[in-house]
Image (tube, rainbow, N blue to C red; front, side, top):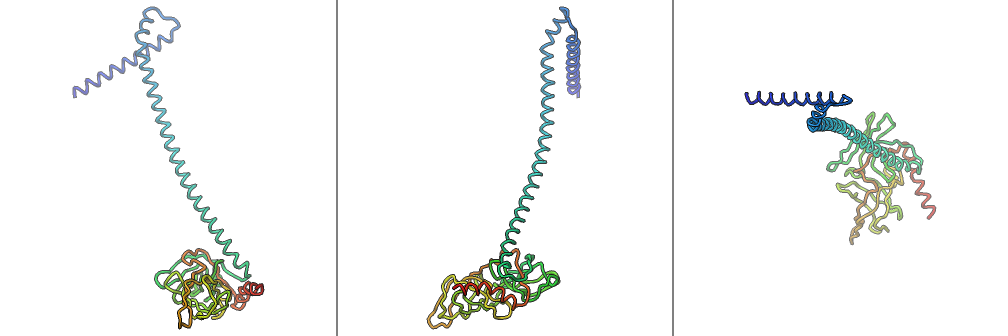
Length: 289
C-alpha cells in the first residue's frame, strides 16, 4: 500500500513538473525579447520541452492512426458485405441466364412441329429404386390431362400419370412400368422400348433380321394411343444377335437425361392432331429421301 502511494506521489510530481515546464516555456516563447536569465532557463528546459513535444506528437499520431484503423476496419466490413451481396446477385443472374437459355432451346421444339403445349417446371422427384416419377407445377387448372406426352427439345420424357388442380405427376420412360411402341428411324422396323432399372432402356420384339446398326435413332410409332408418332426416344446400343433367337437383344441410350430435368413441355390437344404435327418433319425427311 505504501509502495503504491509512493509511486502515485512520484507520478504526480512528474506530471506537475511537466505541466510547469510547458507553461513556463509557453510564457517565455510568447515574449518578444528575453533577458539573460530567461534565455538560460529556455536553454536548460529546451531538451525537456522537445521530449514533451515529441511525446505529445507520438500520442496524437498513435491516436489518429488508431482512429483511422477503426474506420478502415469498419469500411472493410462494409466492403465485405457488399462483396457478398454482389456475389449472391451474380450467381442469381447466372442462374436466370441458364434458365432462359434452357427455355430458349426448349421452345425450339414447338416451333418446329407447331403443336399446343404448356411449359412446366420440375418441382419434385421420386426416382428411387424402380419408381421413376417427377412432379410438375402444372395441373388441371392449366388444361393438363392424363396421358399427355411430356418432352424436351431433345426428345421424349414420359407421360402424365396423375393430375391435381395445380400439379401433375409424370411417369418417366425409364420407369419399369413404361412401355412405348416405337420404330427405327431409318429401317422403320418396329419394337417396344421398355423402362429398366438402369440408365439404358430395354428393347423388345426387334426382329432379328432388322437392318439396324449401333447408333440408329428410335422414335415413337404413334401406336398405343398415348404418344404421337415421331417423338425421338434415343439411339440403339449394345446390339447382340444370337443364333436361333427371333429378336435382337439391344439397349437404348436416352436422348434426354431425365435425372437432370428442370423444365419440360407438356404436349396438349387431341392425339390425332399431335400425331399429324409431330410426324410432319418425318414425312418431309422421307420425301427427301
